[in-house]
Length: 74
Image (cartoon, rainbow, N blue to C red; front, side, top):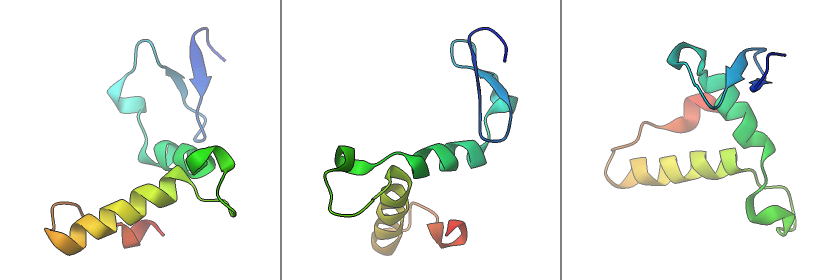
């Protein structure tokens, strides 16, 4: 791993201090959010930030259509 970089889920060395647009991958973002828990684990069952994002997007889509349906990512 390079100095000041983290290796993402897709094996990209990503420097958070000097980000490069071509190294940003939606798969890496989705993977990271799926591993983060909402409410710091205080819910009775696991509920990820990624799951929360998808539910918010679907609710927004149902009301005014400004967010694409996330059903393709399930």
